[in-house]
Length: 205
Image 1: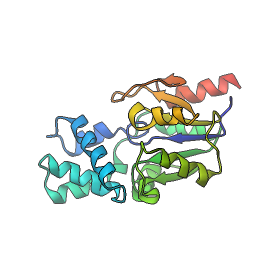
Image 2: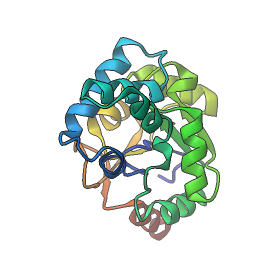
Image 3: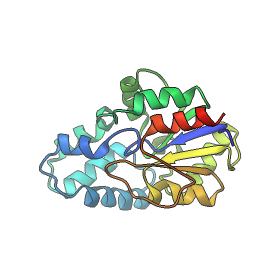
């Protein structure tokens, strides 16, 4: 079924957040421990913007407060995956591409500056006051885009725990992207990158 809407996890699926964090804070060795702490902080206070979540998680691992705040403010400048620019551009020719992300509006401007074009929307936790994997995030996105959950809404992510499990329960078509850092789970489709997803869809139509 041809998509009517794509929503995307951004950090870890479009942006290489592990490479970005390791570049900014090379002394950190346990990336999973950092993002697991971020998940706990998000659950504790969904109203807190992501830049502060990042800063607090880094401070907990010994990063100085000023440096942690600078990293948190600039996560949208972390490197894109090599396929992201071409893949997103080609997918946006098929259906609207909307970021659905645990991040801030400022990070959206940074990411889209790197892409070289604007996405169809950037819906983030700073606006919704909800962090994934809370199903309320999907409900808010559906209302904002006037799209009901169902198989024509495709959700794309490298993370089952944050994204794919909930999206599948809501009846969306799920796409797992095989990134170097990922948390795999069941999905309707699995692709090595976003260019492959665009090529598959174009070949099937």
